[in-house]
Amino acid sequence: MKDREELVLVVKGETELLKYLVDSVPAKRRNTIKAVLRDRQVSVDGKVVTQFDHPLHPGQQIRVRWEKIPFNRLYHGIRIVFEDRDLIVIDKPAALLTVATETEKRRTAYSILSDYVKERDPAAKIFIVHRIDRETSGLLLFAKNEGIRDRIQETWMSTITERTYVAVVEGQVEPAAGTVTSWLTESAAFKVYSSRKPDQGKRAVTHYRTIKGNRDYSLLSLSLETGRKHQIRVHLQDIGHPVVGDKKYGAISNPIKRLALHAQVLAFIHPVDNVPCRFESAVPPSFLRLFAVK
Image 1: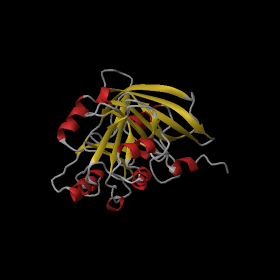
Image 2 (image 1 turned 135 degrees about the horizontal axis):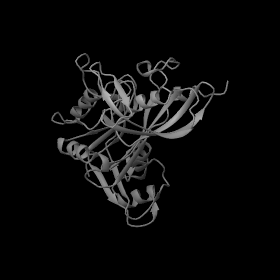
Image 3 (image 1 turned 90 degrees about the vertical axis):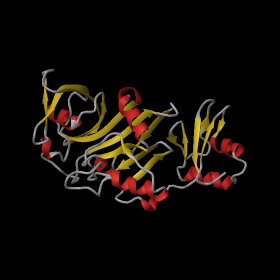
Image 4 (image 1 turned 120 degrees about the vertical axis):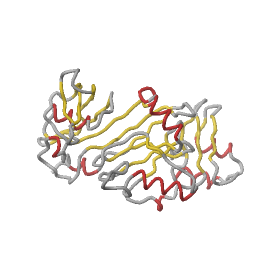
């Protein structure tokens, strides 16, 4: 077995992860298998697992990537969350564009990942599946071929099973949970406006709930039924609680010197293997510091 190969296994009975891999791959030393677990190179049903005694159940799919991801080749703070032959999921830092604009063509998530895949195969390409705002951090999905990208985009509503964001907003949100529905349009100046009239734009639905709060700020979890441009930012302005640092949509404070919006959870059905994949990124520490007891 070449070290560059990816191994895919289907569990037949109840067992634990390390034991299963040791029994299934006798050509690999136990310490080698421990190392790939430690280095986040093993996934169970699309979710990276590092725990040796993680319980396995019949029908689960195990992927082992023998080649360690060369993190030192990834710059500008990008972290690879998941990679297989079809997809790459990254954790994008704030202030990094997803794709090039007229004024910024090289320092983008797309260009960095393109360089990354070409270092291993000069003919390799990546394709943008969706975008998040430059000022927003968090999870972002790319495809490794055009067909996979098209398949996901064409079946977006059924393929993407969960998209959750966290945001710090100004003030104490009341009620603590709710749904915002409006119709969004974009002006010539690239600002998005919200209307309650169905004939004035594209329908957008955002669900929110309060995780924690204090006198000045609230930390919200937000899930999307639709994925319109600037949807969360506009909807939080609509309810009178703009995202911290979002001057464009009404914020008056910027205590952490960035937009306090983070794409925390991304879940989807794998377009080839048809297995559920779910990835979660930690809430940025700068968000949580706003709620530290002084």
